[in-house]
Image (cartoon, rainbow, N blue to C red; front, side, top):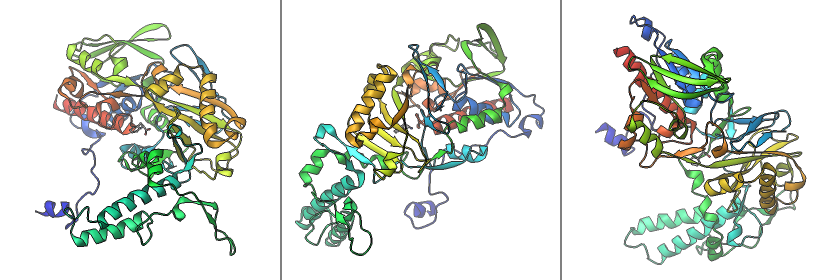
Length: 508
Ligand code: PHE
């Protein structure tokens, strides 16, 4: 009954926010206090899931070896800085020319407060700062809806809230909701809508201070000049701006959000240090995974030579699209499950500017500009305010839009992105540009996906051979979670694999 009262808000509940299943990290004494030898584990993949498996198992003294195909750990957690060179699957080589201290997060870039990613930042001593996911002063620009100039987020939002409130208030007032609501409800609803939509006493929306000003209020004598031209309801709906206001409310996107100070790769760097460089073999491309019945043998190529890693257990923490191409003897159930999961595209371009004109000229400090053009999202940096230079994310797009850019040369991508956004920001978008770096996950060797589509969800029966150990192999990755495309998914999936492996070892 107490729980029911809690649910009704009549009694305090233990936890307001739902947490993942409690995780107990393997402890220092778990193995030796029970007289067990440290089991050996070969971990295939040095992304967040693989590193986390090594890190958590390492707490109990497991002897882990991580095999990572690329020359650095982190997987899709990738921060690009000046001097970094990347070659894509087509052989196109790009070197970032960013100035010292400038960076772009090509993969994960924002962390919600509820995700365990922040717990790992705390535990590993990775400092975090606010990531601005929503900014009332950023822009909206829907070209296909006939917009010829960008609109501030705030203006669009004021108009959408205003007109929706007006319509609902008038409908309520006319009795259209009499069947649904009591007289008291209707009065309260109208009171709420007047406030929410900034309506006047006649329940009409006629604009207001939320929309912004052409001259901002200042000293006595300068009351401010409100932005004119309040659109009609019909114009607001036709502009399509309303579609952007639900995103910022999403459980995984709502402010506040965070980012590590200095770049997202501070997380894999800290994990790598904690695991120990001697346990991690980079440039190690896995050729075969064999469950021998008493252990697991992983053959791999490193520096042109074929090598072997043998261990009691394996954690397979590669993306499913890559794992599916590696010969193994884990059976057809594993193979068909891996093949059912398909890779998705996403891409970003970092545009480095000589000045932070978006701050000085546009008064936009962080946040995201949204457009229906194929650049989709334009991110203003949430750090380095008032600095000399800065990097905008000139496009963050998915699917066909990302693929369209992927098909161009780096130069062509830059030109196309600039041509789109010059319409929003004006000429400085072109003239202040110093350099760019573009990144496309489907073309990135050993990853070949930004995230994955798992038909039926990760708990569909066909994925059982991946969710439970198959022989001596345990699987982990964001793609085996309900938060794929988030590091949280990789962390929690690794924790699940570690728990299963450790429980098994303690029972053996
Ligand atoms: N986590 C990624 C991001 O925030 C991808 C993603 C986008 C995931 C939107 C869910 C929703 O950009």
